[in-house]
Image 1 (spheres, one colour):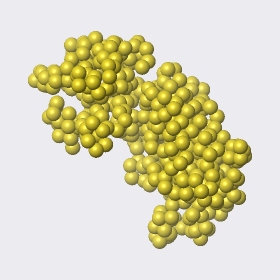
Image 2 (spheres, one colour):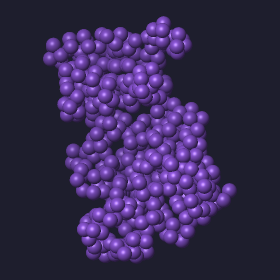
Image 3 (spheres, helix red, strand yellow):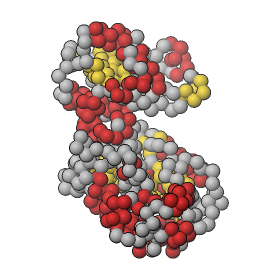
Image 4 (cartoon, one colour):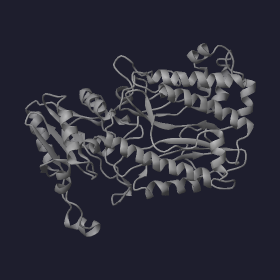
Amino acid sequence: MFEKSIYIQRRNQLKNQFSEGLLLFLGNDEQPMNYADNAFPFRQDSSFLYYYGIQEPKLAAVIDLDENKEILFGDELTIDEIIWMGRQETLREKCEKSGLSIVLPTKDLQDYLQHALKKNRNIRYLPPYQPTNKIKLLHLLGIPPLEQEKKASVPFIKAVVAQRSIKSKEEITQIESAVNTSVDMHVHAMKMAKEGMKELQIANAIQEIAQNGGGRLAYPTILSVHGEILHNHKQHNTLKKGQLVLNDSGAETAMGYAGDLTRTFPVDLQFSTKQKEIYNIVLKAFNQASAMVAPQVRFLDVHLEACTVLFNGLKEIGLVKGDTAEAVSAGAHTLFFQCGTGHMMGLDVHDMEDLGEQYVGYTDTLKKDTSTFGLKSLRLGKALEAGYVLTVEPGIYFIPELFARWKAANKLADFINYQAVEHYLDFGGVRIEDNYLVTSSGSQRLGNYLAKTVDEIEELRGS
């Protein structure tokens, strides 16, 4: 946990955004793998973690603005739990570290909320994503699960997003620690990978590094010779000469802060000419996009710059044609680049995505495009502010199924050289990703440097 004063200050800042009512936080529960006592590793809800810091299941908290109270609802370990789990720090001791003095049993939460409802007091909550918390909201407030998201408090969501978006120096230290562990994971992957090895062997090795760093993986590792599958979590392939390995993996610290890096490298010790051409197009897009990251710059414009550079590079090698501005406006680049150029990062690898991309990555005046192919997958579009932490991750992906569909429809044929692209359908994909802090004057790449150029990667592969 951070110092007690940090959690008190965070809650005070949140309270200052409201004049009445209750703010309800539901912590996460353990999720069974196959029966109740065999659970997946516990991960606390990130907003609960941000304001309270207590990594314990079955907790809830209320900030009562009308009565000027902060209450945590939870239960101490029973003697049966102590027998199986051992004596641990008590809940009251953990609450003391969070600056909380009022701790009530879990069973008192419903009566407390029902009493508030009878007085017509406003109870605000954040949109739940765990099924158990959806059931709890039904039990506590009588709101059916299908209605809970639309009835979540938008002012509460916006207040949390505004606060969590600006990272403190303590948070930056945590994120840099996660990124540094992530760098170690990627270096190890590039050094160990060789022909005949299973993807799973590399993925397992880098997971060990994440856990030896005191935390865990920030998200399921994407490590595949089929890098054209954007979130490919299957790792059953055997590495073969002529293939590229795309490794998108990151560590999470014990306090919950994430790193998120991607590198693409050849199974051979050197890139082929064809691989080098595509890789350098992505690298140029990465360099130009990351150079744009600064306060007041819309990330939508960073994304469109990356799309422009990618299209121009593909035009130079004959895969596309025509006016670049017209092509990007028409979406011709999305045959090769279907996702967004980056996202916010912090306590979540896609920071606060549970609160809604329309609130996290966009504003009331810049709405998220939810229908246009490519733009609908851009998680961040709004103007950047000092204190934001985000990723920059352009890529080129040759997806045979998408190509076949476009070619059959002769889609955007004025811009696509379909015959030339045919020769790349077994290529896979390339993505390059680093993490950045927006500063008052520009941006700062977070963490230790990780090999990025063709020469640097080939040197590391050969070491």
